[in-house]
Image 1 (cartoon, one colour):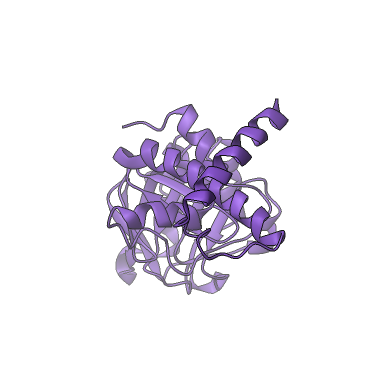
Image 2 (cartoon, rainbow, N blue to C red; image 1 turned 120 degrees about the vertical axis):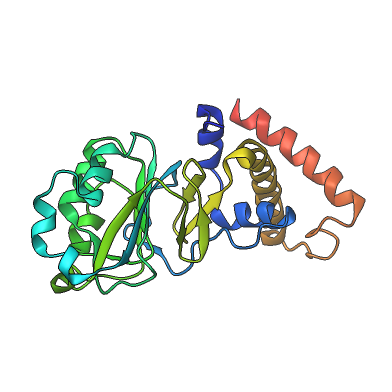
Length: 241
């Protein structure tokens, strides 16, 4: 099921925390990619369908530096084939000792219109990547000398990234806190619910700032809380017009 422009737009307005709550209600507890952080948390939400690359431990006789001259090398091939609007997600075995990519490859992805990049390993040239206009998430900077420690092996297959299952076409959302994976078939309903949850949480935050107790408000076990929210939401819509 393809990501629609409407759902993409909704997902750009909600947090990964809210999305995780919506997924948790459906029994999905392992969709947040563990231990990855944005290099630049101020770029706004990253949203796109997953295009994946899988690394494995390198076998030295098959992974010398010379492999990077091969145009069919999986890493190079994936960078040139990742579709515009997609998020390039790499399974780097949660190991940042070897670089998943560097600034030149990330720049190429940015110029090609890719929506963002995620690895559960690390990037080299991370200060340069942080200055690019593409969301990028990693565990920590990688030592440039360990470039051949991992071996790129599979393109656009199911992977694990930071303990989260990622299937090609799943919807990836990143914000200033981290990255969540939404199964493609659920993306529309999760986006709709997250927008509603975000509106209610905005209302609650405003009420709490005014001194209101959270009891009966969050969660809204007091019927008056829901009634107050409906009035607040209608007023908010009028103000936006």
